[in-house]
Length: 159
Image (tube, rainbow, N blue to C red; front, side, top):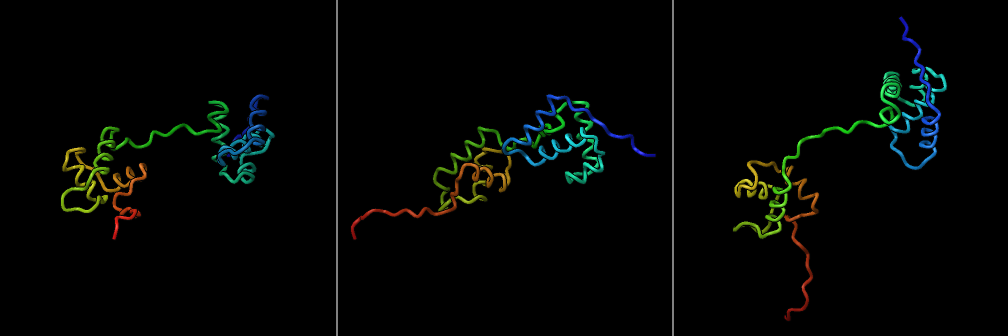
């Protein structure tokens, strides 16, 4: 049994918006492809033909059309925000770890390492447990590299 023909009718306002989006400046590629698919579907093309023209699967083209019919142009072009993972560290915990790294390393160590920061954060009870990768990303976001020695040129101290 063949699928029923997919037809959508764009409103004049939506058609103008899509054409302006395509003529405009920089856009995400997926948004441009969805806009092209909607315009071609509005022109009477079938989903398989549109899918070949915009290099999307026929099912993806049908999903775009379905989202336009049910929820409107915004939902057809743009994705809903995704929830993402829960932050492992609170703002206060991040600040305390950064402050710890900015201070001198523990007795017996010349400098902080990522592993040492993780161990000390647990030992000082800043966090119940933490991995090295979480520490690495935290330090990277704050542009901190405590394991590097600073190459500082000191002015004449007299020889």
